[in-house]
Length: 395
Image (cartoon, rainbow, N blue to C red; front, side):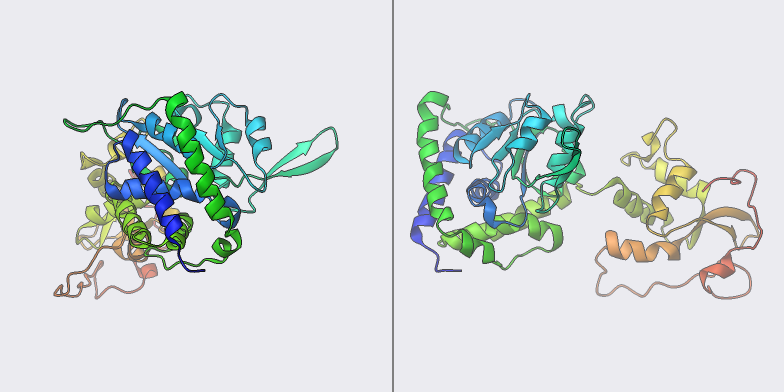
């Protein structure tokens, strides 16, 4: 990348000042992340991924709509999707797409979102290049490829689906506290100056699209988080000044916040809760495992369906991790359909690892059946055994 320039840092500083004039952000890192996301919209042709900006709040009047107003005034070619038809949205996306803005996102993802399947598909697919939607044109008798790649900001109450938040910079808004004040935002009075700032951001970044496209910034995170945040960090590095350090601090703070706020799938939550339910037991009957899972008042399993988590649903989820129930003879002589702790260890290590204290003793193996130490899994399964009547036919 070419040498950072003070002009870019000055523009980002001006955008930060404008943003915090009208909106109280929860943390300085959140404010810096929004600034960098807005700036990144002006260089969309350079990016391999189009990060989403999720603006969420637990209640109304937390400033999410005002934040979306400032984003709209400063981003690249804002396109408001509220009440827009899916066809209009799809046809608006080109090689240099607009920035999609969605307020009241529950109209797309919430329980009353019937009829928005196409728009949900676009927002899910459009995070990465070369993920076009396919449509059959009856007039031409041909299949069309419609581009979906576009940066998008979504505001709403509560969490967005995992498929969105896992690809997003997530800003958790809150109501202003005592003593927190902002300037009122007036569209006719204030928007023109913000649009001028947007034009200056565009001119700065568009002059170096080829440089930005080749950028490979050092990232403090990996995998999908790195894909999502890379355009923002690339903009910060291009600007220089304090922005490279502030960008990486924002990455670490907001990704850690996502982890702390339980941004994991229900499947991974189940894996982690199974580890707690097992404790030190080497094996459990299915019925016992379910009983322990549903006994946790803070876990979702007692209300997972009309009757809570069932043996069949448990089996379906765990099979995704190559964990299957078996007929097991326990050391007390009983037989039941159940699960072995050893079959979970690989999935636990991969999907929900826990730090091991440096002075922790090695885990001791406990025999599961009469006659010696634990062998491989097949010796725990009794060929032809159908289990007890209560477990027959369950996972």
